[in-house]
Image (cartoon, rainbow, N blue to C red):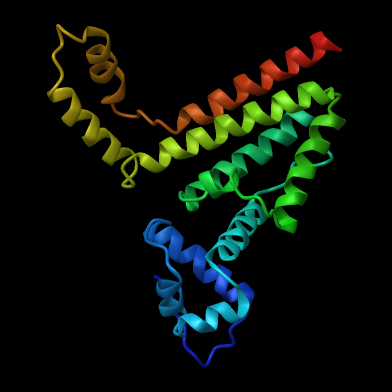
Length: 220
């Protein structure tokens, strides 16, 4: 949990940085102004000097998460550029597993959030996608990205070994005759050495980008 001392100068950036660390540590259900103030070594009222309420802190936290995501490079083909952004976004969301629901639900976007969305739209439009296809592309890409991030966040945080152990425990309780396909998938794939759920992200991302590119060319 983040800590500091009262002797260190407090400002909005320090509060947001500490809030991110706290949310990463305890999750948003347990995130409170009181716990944030304690982590900073100040009283709760000191936080309110910089932010009027918890919602404005969350807005700033979401904006800080967006700022960590790489923008699509402007000197690459749109398919490669959007892939760079999506891979970066997934890495950032893995560091902040609480963030996906808040990134799509805030109504007061900050400058980093607006810059990020503008860069995505610019990338897709520069790639020759129509406005309608751009809307489809952005919605599909981020639905996949956020959905995958949410699934990863729900998996055992101990990595591949943890997932493997959970899968083995579940497989041991499966009735092979009643659920033959599930049993086959679990025993012959998921519980085998080298299985990695996260590997499906880039595989799926490439399928989506390839499909969007093909659809865009057909509609041109």
